[in-house]
Image (cartoon, rainbow, N blue to C red; front, side, top):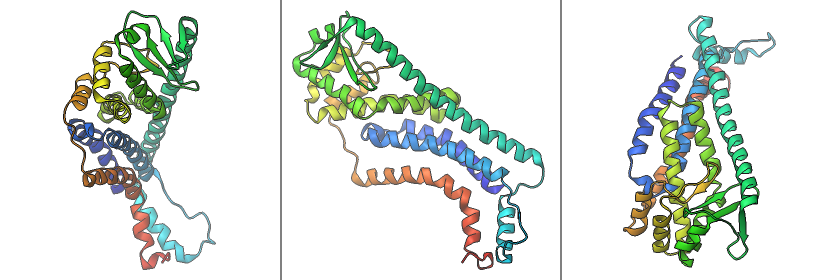
Length: 315
């Protein structure tokens, strides 16, 4: 019971207070890749804590055979005492229902988001096959449209779409900077990150860690793509392109350069960017690992504790 309560409490704390602290922190803009990993670890840890807490609350260990060595008898009895709930079947039933509902809901939300994104991409590609033309020099699809816009459509063909208006208002250097940004989205498979975060919001729409995580990951993948583009293109070209395309819109299935966190992106590109210290970076990476491992360690703690006791017969 104590283990289950601890895991549920950790889940509630991480889903609210932990998510709030991460959302309000300033460092994610300096290390967006690490920030994405922390958001993912936090969401995964919340789900693990709830599911493992339900397992710890519901499981009971029984001796199914009299042939089991007496050496292990005390060990099994101690494990049974450590995990068993104090009596009634209602607690076990509720725990099992929570376990099944949370697991099934998470799987449903993520799979639904992935299927919907794939369906929307196929629909957009069918439309583009009819109305867009391929530019062999840039290797992009050009769409005649009055709005200056650029976006990518992930998938097997990994298409990048640029409107004719965007090509008219952007310089050649800015066009290539935009393409580098979109290619970074495709290489990083950012559409999968967004599909997972959207799926968790769909499944658990009232839980802050999933709602805020989806909002933050949407912003952070844009910063990651900007950083990738900066490796081969001038920051000024990327910043000018952002200003030109700031009011663009893209299909739901696309990853666009446009309006997500424009002010922050321009500040990072035009201002003096502070690098995250190596020590801080290492601490954050360790935090990601600890966040993922902690629920498993808590759930298995009674077993580890009893296995180390002399009378358990496992040492």
